[in-house]
Image (cartoon, rainbow, N blue to C red):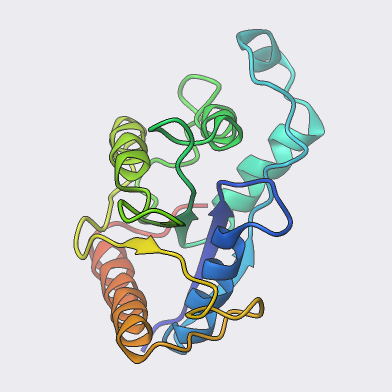
Length: 190
């Protein structure tokens, strides 16, 4: 059985983000063939085309971090019916300069939590559109729109509700299968 390193990007910059808690739960519930490393996005300046001739260290570090992993897991909230600006900024950095897109053929999955019942559904649709343009193969099923309740998730990422725990365990197992499937036909880049 192959092992894969998954870089995870949390769309919220808050240290107490419910999506950070969700990421901890996902890592706990993932199958053993997946290892995880966070890809931080908080220190990136706002992207603009002028940087393409000389990327700053933060942009180079982001691109290197994505290149170093076998897949990317996006764990994101929904801001104003779309993805957070910080996440979009990170994607812009990673996909530039033209011809040097770090997401090309990099398997990805999207999940998110919110206090509301829609559970980031619209943000995920927006993010999937952006990732499609970035040529990132996406795990499109199962979709995972998580309504966050403090009585279901502990701050350390323990999942206290059995049905939620089973769903998230299955989501991560499916992601491991998806990564293996993509890498069986697309050689690891980097």
